[in-house]
Image (cartoon, rainbow, N blue to C red):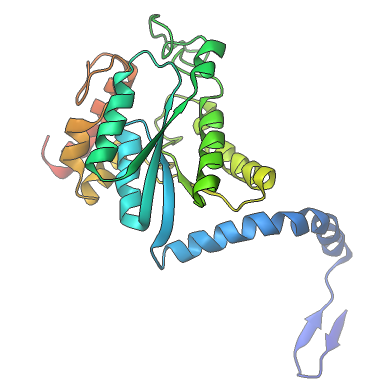
Length: 265
């Protein structure tokens, strides 16, 4: 049905099918828009202006350190949070604290040792690292990113911060389910509902492979710093690491790919 309006505009009545679908979705959209709309508006505005403050989930590794420099470029005020979950190379915590201090940002250290008690994996136990074809690698820590982001959110709210930055990605990663975009988005909504607060979980590396992560560090003017001062190695060796563990191999492969792209291999 077509109706002529007073201003000569034409309004076409939606089909019954469309009207029915909109009616069904309305009860879901109305309560959700209060949490989702501010998030998308903030992301849109973020391209136009520098945002105010952010909390970076920070381990002192390549990814989280690149995220720290990304945050320092995009936010006026940045703080970091590091978790002690019983990781077998405690040097990770010292590296994170040192980098944060060098960059002049506050570092919060939270005790998550209970996580190490609940799970058995190669990052919290002195066992051989394995990566079977039909299962997740035994470096996967069940619940780690879920708990880290949840506790980071509690801290962020206390600090009056809405934006939480994490260096997860689902490109050439190891298959961890809590690194996937769908998980992060769902947790973002859950946290907003749970605490009645408009959190925005930012994932600058989500769609970047390791070579592109090196490229981002270079674009931020921090390529050499990230290469020399971060700790990614599962065996607790800074910089290039041991060269044998999966984390070192992934890091080095990405580095070589990026250097080849730049013609510096």
